[in-house]
Image (cartoon, rainbow, N blue to C red; front, side, top):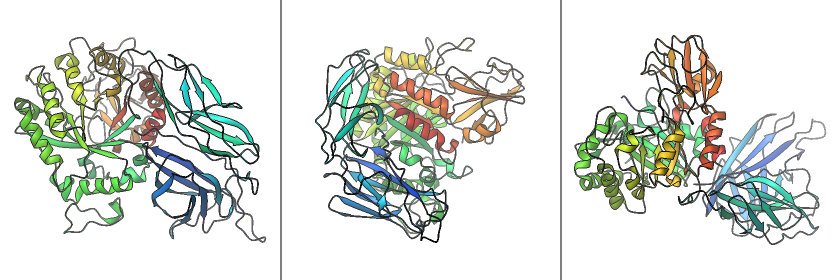
Amino acid sequence: MRFRHRAAAGFATLLLPLAGLVGLASPAQAATTATATYAKTQDWGTGFEGKWTVKNTGTTAISSWTIQWDFPSGTSVTSAWDADVTSSGTHWTAKNKSYNGSIAPGASVSFGFNGAGSGSPSNCKLNGDSCDGTTVPGDAAPSAPGTPTASNITDTSAKLSWSAATDDKGIKNYDVLRDGSKIATVTTTSYSDTGLSAGTDYSYTVQARDTADQTGPVSGAVAVHTTGGGTNPPPTGNKVKLGYFTEWGIYGRNYNVKNLVTSGSAAKITHINYAFGNVTNGQCAIGDSYADYDKAFTADQSVSGVADTWDQPLRGNFNQLRELKAKYPNLKVLWSFGGWTWSGGFAQAAANPTAFAQSCYNLVKDPRWADVFDGIDIDWEYPNACGLSCDTSGAAAYKNLMSALRAKFGSNNLVTAAVTADGSSGGKIDAADYAGAAQYVDWYNVMTYDFFGAWAAQGPTAPHSPLTSYSGIPTAGFTTADAMAKYKAKGVPASKLLIGIGFYGRGWTGVTQDAPGGTATGPAAGTYEQGIEDYKVLKTSCPATGTVAGTAYAHCGSNWWSYDTPATINSKMAWAKSQGLGGAFFWEFSGDTSNGELVSAINSGLS
């Protein structure tokens, strides 16, 4: 199958001060030391996902572990995995499972849980001793300060005030956290934050420290939106972090839904687009029925660890996504229709958008898998313009199609779309009424990659995902910044625009010049297709040798590649936040490393 490569929880991590040494050995043995670290990996307002990590920092093995902590009233564990978690009032205890109690020297194990409320743990103990080694026996940690209030908000500053925390030994100072990161330590109950960006959302919390240097739970959060920054509405909620999962990845790539768990990626995203459903005869249709709902996964391939049976009602990727949502209930999954290969069917769909919307609703909400999908994504490449084929349905067709989908799917389902990033004058953004359609979508996935590639076999070499323009760029307007500026100028709110990241590179061969702009003899060899290769391969086979326009390039031998790295992704996420964009998306999971380093870069960059 030939396809187009493309692609709200604010994440805050709290590290309890854990220099603690926990003696677990007899006097005749070398002492075993360990630490326990807590992280809030996701937060969706009324609940969150937390993770504890126990690390053996000693020289002898640990045979078992127990972590105890206190949550403030109103915060609780609702489900857990890889540990047995119990409670007595606000006191919580987690004990290892039979399979993960033993920890070799230098190794670590983690368990996770979903929680209700917004509090953070205090009074941590690991195997009966302090997690951090600094807690004074009998000395309680301070309480949470009051939720801050904001005043004197300007384009670049805001004043925060909060009610004092309490402690039996007295409060020493307060840490002020912005978007989960400490920005200041003060001895008073107020702080003025400066140097902010106009028209931007921030979240502030406060944490108290007592005279024994114990930190208490984090306060509630206050949202601040600085003034200025244009007329676009501010982003609502937290940043979207969306990845595409391809139905065909389970074949040659051997990339299953379970890989989202083992890589750690599932805990760092908010949404998944399942690609693709077909568009044919003016209707939404199944793309690959075997992959979608028939393939039986073995126990080791399954998210739940349980093998599919021949007679279960639903198998395939859909059932695996169902199991993934059970493990990560905050995740939202959308079914994406179209793509490069199947976009030709949209012309007939646009002729009767109401009938098209009804067919899509009937398929997405089929009783066999209705609980799997939280909405629909439309990948029409390109309305009233040319992609694999040319469309002449008219500039209004796109708006009419999205209007019909919103009317049918209603406000309780997501309706999104992947859209062109052609910011050139008279280019694809100008060909359809994207601004008029924006009122009907939750967001646009702006495909800010594949600007340049070895379809121009002789070059010039150019980065396929430039953030900004640069001297010698082959086509003016083929950048992320140009695309976003054009959408905003047409009236699309910045909060409805997501920046796109490709988890792959595009490359040429026969290149002698290191810098962009060199000549070539054709596409470089790729694992699945000439001129394209996964990041996980390129990072070692052809490491980056330079950067241009906010992305990386690599010249190795006679090959020249461009691709994004964790470092360039981090800078792109910072840019996206400065522009007030709604978040980021990427194409697609299987191009990442086995430990999900590109997903991690997107997550940390937007958090």
